[in-house]
Each structure stands twice: as structure tokens, then as C-alpha cells.
Image (cartoon, rainbow, N blue to C red; front, side, top):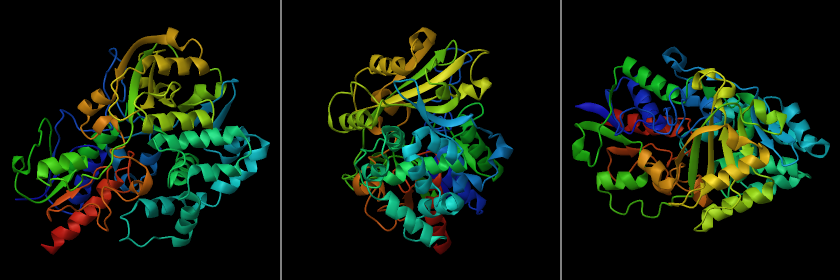
Length: 469
């Protein structure tokens, strides 16, 4: 009998399997698709030689993750590449605010009236980043914080809505960039703890950067799988699990799935019936015959580029995606241009380009024209660079990755108490009604993103149980 079976080979399932194998447990991992990766894959979606990331592309949380930093992933082929600028946010007048590794450069891009306010916001946390990120990403309520003073100070700043935090800025440039940071998790700007979301992304840029993985996000997943095999774990792909009886006997079962799928597979009935899913996204991957013709020079060297004219436009787009049955007319866009720093992603002189906009949950329309109208506002002539495009709305994203219910790439709404307490109000969020069944997807704390911490935290709960039996 195996010690543990893990279902789902996304970053969290892979991390859970690795953590258990590192501690001497026998582990088998089962994945429904033909390759590991989940939200961290790389495929030729458009033309030969153009390597796209169907979901995650830039990795500010992965490079800062306490789980990943403790593993020898570089030995298994993972290499982080850092663009000249982690992120840029262009404006219609051809200028841009930036999120640079340098706090001073970032502050200067906001203008003199907000430079000091921004420095005062981030500077107290920068020396404590590694400890802080470990504290707020660790197993909730059961692990003592290493730096409780800094964590408490972060909570005072981060728990209020981002609309409160941005009142300290006098001009729109800083407000807009920060609103875009919050929108990375599709949360309304006025939501609980949205200040923390924006602040985490900013601090990550200043401390560890917003890199891409050489060759694509698949490199991270392959490195985790390679290390798992080195530790003696086994990986089975093309293996769809429909019920617990489909799996070999084990002392524990760990699911990197949505709560909905887990309830169906394990026969939990309506145990997760109150769990809420959030807005979806409409994703386009482009093959381009040259770089994106951004008007703002800063955007040409940035790995990630946010698109939203001002904070009001971004807020309206988020509200529309959260509440309406049609997509925003001017969607907020998150774009990534990996080939500005990684020439292996496209043929010589050509580029891959990654973009998505927010849409309502389960939306079935086509956002291509609205997305390209937005891009043309900040990069005139963009359409002339397009060689091919691959589009995916909520139905296609859910078909590609079953965790993305209704196109929700966060596997659950990041709003209200569910921002922190997911998938249920519980002191042990990784346990389930069955004592041998656990959940480790991004539907559990600390939530969405490619950082492996739900898998890391769930593995702690699993090995504690295994040592008791």
C-alpha cells in the first residue's frame, strides 16, 4: 500500500507530492492530461516554433515562494529570466508608470507628488520580505509567525480595501498601477484584503522580480516532476480519476482539484455547495512578426504590461465581469511578452505575446475585438504584427483545465472572507469529511497563483496524519 496518492499534477499537486516524498513517504501522482503542469504548461498553440503558456506566464510569486526556494529545481532545468523591467503600465498619452526592481525608479514614475508616499508604503516591509512571505503563506492558524510584528503591520495595511490604501496617492498614475496589481486576482477594488494583494505584487517585484521561466512555464512543472521522480515518486499521466475506487490503495489521498470535482469524486455531496467561483477570463496567445509597438518606451522592455487607462476604467471592468452577463466594453488586460527576454520562445526576430481580459463567469462570447481595440490604444499597429492567434474563453479554459470552473483561473472567487478562508470556514482547510482525503488546490490558503504553497501546506497536514497512524 502506498503512503499517499496525489490527484492532479498542477504546481500544488506536484509540490504536495514532492514534500511527502522528501520525508520518506511512498507517493504516486495521477494526472488526467498527457503532461504534467496544470496552470504551468507550455505548448505550440499557434505556429511551429512559437512556444506559448496557456495559463501562467510571469512568476512573481513562484520566484518568491518558500516552497519552491527550498527545492533544487535549478538542478532539474528551471532557470528564471528577468526582463529589464518587471512591469509597466502605459497611459494613453504615451507615458508609463513602472514597477521596477528599484523602489526609487518606481516612485519616480508616479511623479513627485506620490513618490514619497509610495516609498513610505513599501520600504518598511522590504528588509523582512522573505520572512513575511513565509508567514502569510504558511499553514493558517497552526504555525507561529516568525516575525509577528511585521506580519501585524502588514495586516493593518493590507486587510482594508485597496480603495482605502490608494487614498494616500494624490495623482492617478500611482492609483492606476496599484489598481492593476489588485486586478491580477480578479478582485473588485473595494474588496476585503485587496490592499494586501496589490502590496504583495509590488514587494515581490522589488525583492525577487517578476521573471519568466526559460523555455516557458512548463519548465517549472517539469522540474518539480523530475525532482519527484528522483525522490522515488511515480507520475502517471492520461489517467482520469472519476471516483476514489479508480485509485490504488493508499493511506492518504491528496487532491489538486476544485472543491466541486473533489466532492463528486469522493462522494461528499453538498459539502462545498457554498463555495463560490469568480469571474472568468478570455485568453489570447499571439504569434507576432516583431515586438509589440508600444507607444510608451518603458513597455517595450517590460516582461508584464498592464492595460487600463485609469483606475476608474479598471474598476468598471472588474465590476462588469463580476456582476453582469456581458463582458466589459473596455476590458482591463494583463499581458506578458516572454520573448523580450527569452529568445527560445519564438523564431528569430519574432515574438510570442500573452494577454487576457476579465469576463463574467461561464461567459461564451468572443472578446477578441475588444481586446485588440484596447491594445491598439497603447500600441498602434498591433494588429499588423499578428501572424496567428489562439483564443480561449471560459468554456475552452475549463475544458483545458478542469480546475478553472467557468473560466475562473483562481479556482474560486477572491472576495469577502473567501479571500482568506477557503474552501470552507475551518481551522484545517486542507482536510475533508473523509479522514484520509485532503485538498491542496489553489481553492485552499493562501489562494491562487503559481507558488505551490497550498500543496506545501496540505502536505504538512498529510504527514502529521500519517505519523499518527
